[in-house]
Every structure is written in structure tokens, then in C-alpha cells.
Image (cartoon, rainbow, N blue to C red; front, side, top):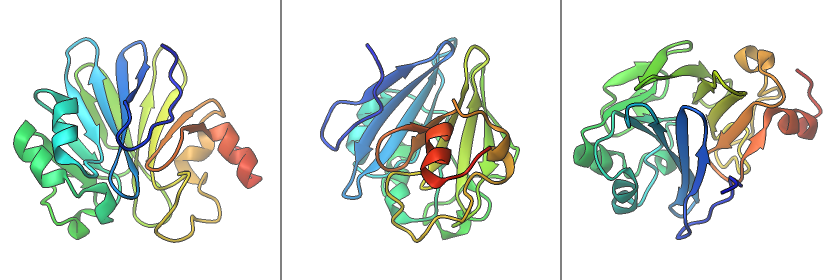
Length: 202
């Protein structure tokens, strides 16, 4: 099945099968907000990006234990279901160091730029992005191109104020155009498409 990265609330999830990692994308809540379940093929260990809403739906999607939940943004549309999903799955809660204090569910692990998160044999890197204290997750696929979970940055919908003048600054500047972008709202993209849309170059 070809992955299209387009989902809607109440619809079926989209599944992106990589060599070592399986990414399942689901839209929930009134915003709507995208949630991403990452499963390591070798071990079955799982991580959820943004327990945004609809806890029963997310718990069914996880269907078992969950190593961690990473909240990419301080705003409520990214963590409405966090407490319930964490309690049901035993997941460790993680968030960017600058956002953790604003999330009404205790953050067990704070993430700073460059921190590594291991899911089985797969490794994600926390990337601090310019703007409203978001944290992104970078998966550098050893058998393909990089994959970037950007939260509200580079999102089809940016509801919490304008993006920085150059959202590609810093660590993102060195990533190739083919880097796959998984946003918190809307369809997937690539860094190349986002650079062209904003008139920016790497």
C-alpha cells in the first residue's frame, strides 16, 4: 500500500512502512491534530508523537504497551489525551524543556536539542525549532532519507501565531530537500517543498 500522508478525523490511519520503523498517522480532535505512532520493526517497541485528543482511539491504536509519548508543543491541542493514554499504556511522558512547564501533565523526561530517544533499535533525535518553544523529532533512516516530525512548525495549519521568518534555520538548514515532513496539522510534505513554498534555500 502506498503511503499518502493524508488523514481526516474519523477516517482510517495512514501507514508509512520504512525499513526499520513503521509510522502510523491518525488525525483526532477539533483542530484536527495529527498523532504519529512509531513502531520499531525489530523489537515492537512503540512511541507516540502527541497524544492530542480522543484517548480511547489512541489507546486502541497503540494496542498494548508504549515506551514513551513525546509532546511537541505546549498548547492543549497537542496533549488533551496525554494523561489518559500515559496511564493506560505505562508510557514515559516527554516534552521539550521550554514547554514542559506549560503542559498540565507532568513531564518525566525533558528534551533538549540533540537528545537521543531510542525506540528499540531505532534512534530519534530531539531538535529544538525556532518559534513557540516546539520540539521536533528527527529520524535519520539508515536505509533512506531523513524523516522529521515537526509539530506546528512547517504545518499545513499554524494556529498559534506566525511561524519564524526562517523556520529552516539551525539544524534544519543542513537537512536535504528529500527529508520527509510529518506536521501536526494537515498533509505531509518535504523540506524541499517547504523551502520552495517559502522562497528559502538550504
